[in-house]
Image (cartoon, rainbow, N blue to C red; front, side, top):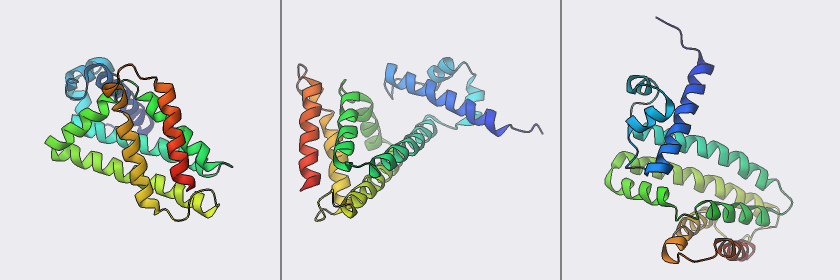
Amino acid sequence: MRKVDPAKHEEKRREILEAAGKCFVRNGFRGASTTNICEEAGISPGHLYHYFPSKEAIVAAMVEAHLVKTAERFAEIADSDDIVAELTSELGAVQLKRKSGGSLLFEMMAEAARKPAMAKIVHRHTQGMRSLLADVVRKGQANGRIDPGLDPEIAAAVLISTIDGSSTLAIRNPGIDMQKSAEALQTMLSRFLAG
């Protein structure tokens, strides 16, 4: 039996995830097939299944990678001098990245309503994000920068829902100035966190 080089295996997984991300952006979650992903990654379907057994497994790996990256960024924010300004700036940037209306977010949520496997992935991602945000809130409370009266878990859930909900702005108001709406969102979040 041939030995697998862990570094090469991980590199190929990253390449596949990057290819899948491009396909999801270009074709939407439902429109991106494993064939599209294979073509983008330059591999055969059999090769793909060596790394990921399904499209849902690809999404799950993307979610895990996102949580690792977010944990690193939130650790930086939690150690900053102005935790509220840093956090609200980061959350405002998320809203700007979704200026096209967050279509992938909406597609994944719709898919989660139809498929239990996707619902588990979305739920796991939400739990991870809530835990990370709650930790930032707790650290801010310990430093006297965030309202000590906030329940960190509830505050984190509200922050996630607010950011996700702000993704509808471009759909509901196509001409809206996204930069100004991001600034308004930051002001609102700052007031919420500072108490």
